Structure formats: C-alpha cells, structure tokens
Length: 115
Image 1 (cartoon, helix red, strand yellow):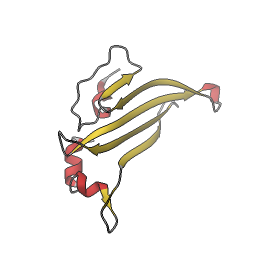
Image 2 (cartoon, one colour):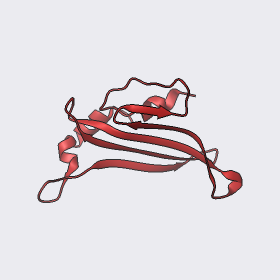
Image 3 (spheres, rainbow, N blue to C red):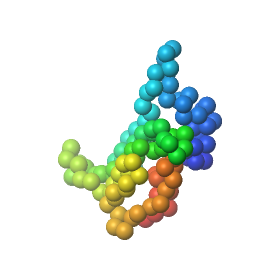
Image 4 (tube, rainbow, N blue to C red):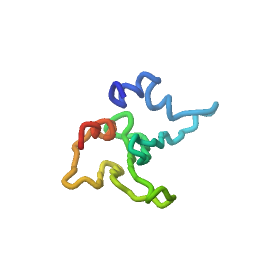
C-alpha cells in the first residue's frame, strides 16, 4: 500500500459508493481476502472486512492474517504466526503485542517492520 486505507477508499468514491451495488443500491458487506506463498515455502492468508461506523465513514470490523507451513510436505498445516482483529480487539501469536490503531486503518501494513 502506498497510502492509508481511508485514502484508497476515497479515491474510489468513498465507502458508501463501494458498499452499494445493483440498481436498487443494496447495502453489501465489503471485504477482501488473499492467499500468498512466501519465499521460504510457508503460506499466508490475509483478509479484512469493513463496516459502517459512528466515529468515521467506516471502520475495520475484522482483519486477520495467518502464516503457516506444511508438515514435511504433507497437507497437514502448522500455524507459525497470526493476528486477529475483531471490532478493535487484537489477539496475536506475538507476546506483548497490543497495538494502538485507528478504527479505519489496517494493522497489516504497520506490521511490515516487525520481526
């Protein structure tokens, strides 16, 4: 990402424009998910969902990232690292991890510098 989520949403007409579809302007949930294979062979799933908010135009209602590896090349998965953010509450495999983040910002880009 080259800018904050809020700027990306605004460039596309705002949250209300994105969440509506169809001729009758139905309210639709909005989320994105992606799967990645990392250079070391481990795999990663990342997803987030946006919802209306009273504090701002929208809020990140759910954000989740899980990195796992395959056990000896089999289909069995072993979780390596994760974070899960649901309605502002964050759980993580990192000890002592308790980020302070705005409700309309993604946590994922902030974690890029952590080891």
